[in-house]
Length: 415
Image (cartoon, rainbow, N blue to C red; front, side, top):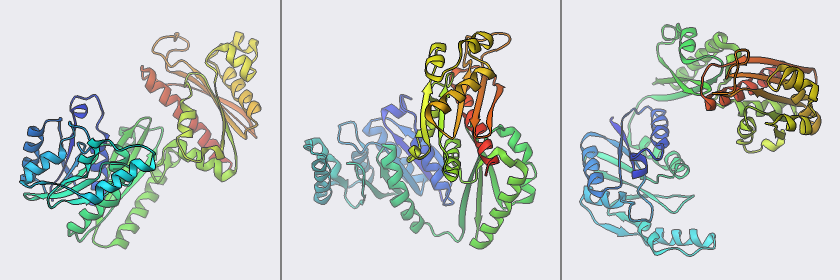
């Protein structure tokens, strides 16, 4: 079984837009035991698009195409599919009515150009788009079954999971069960993780071990296949138990959840609340925490007190503390955490202050230095870290993650 992905669009080809769709598709298709052998990309050119569709039709069995299903003249996937398949383009009145209703529900008039989105190659099976105006379709060309999906990531992902993957499973007659497990970790790089888990291949030869950096976290991936589903599950359970013994609290989540989500779960479990005081992280911690729906259940307040005057007026940090220790110091971080906890009335608080760089450091406190404080019912503490990444954005991310990890470990102690 040969499977490939084709991303279309000048914005993808030119690098103006990062192609996250192909990565997502590969991950999801591999979870059902099919390996994506190649990623392809082509711009908004009908001749070039037709040519690559014909090439793919000769060498691949499953091809997933993203993009080019919009209403504008540079959306050319339909036209190229028609040419490659040697069929006609046909208007589907039912789909057209759904597109019209989509605009009516938003109290808008449908532009005439959207009629194109209701046109499909003759013989194609329509893939409904429940959250957008661009339906997809599947079509047989040569040896390959093509699945054409919109380029908008949210629409593509929903259609892939709910329609395309079930259809692929029906088409592929496979006697094996497949299972993929993702474990999130923090505090060890890929090489250090591999070293700690070096005995894994010999202990669990039927499970493929992989690593994927998602800075500042690293994911461990377990890939399995087995003709017996019960045996597959039991083997994975043994493998996870072994990994837990090896890594301990370096494991953030056994289900692949990011740090902020795990912290939120722990706060909910304790019926506790959190406030954050940020300086060098510039609101990044608050952003991560509020990415989760329902975060208002535990997240009360964030204060980005970048200037010393703000640390004093908002958080109540005393001037003598700043004069004696400076803005980047454990004492200042603790005063910030205590201040935001008092201000919000939260159960817990964390604070960050440091030098994100690349400039602004000194021999005593070089760029990459951060002070993180934790305040809770049992008192206040602070930690000093140094991360020699040299890049401002990387430093801000590792500072924020380290702060959340400090909170995570403290929350685990109290459970």
